[in-house]
Image (tube, rainbow, N blue to C red):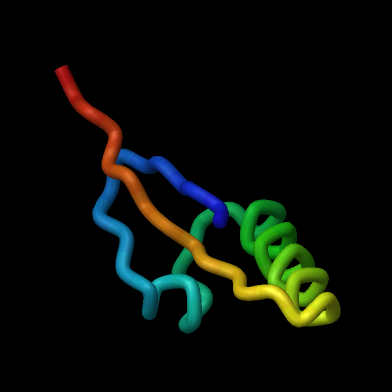
Length: 53
């Protein structure tokens, strides 16, 4: 499982429709997902909203 934490609201379709701001992070998630798939393992991406003061 990968846990992402951001200040903005995160929706699964943001990742699927290229709305993420960090292309490096997006690419790393794709590569990690492919690695898991290659080993017949499940891959999960979770989000936790950062607390603002």
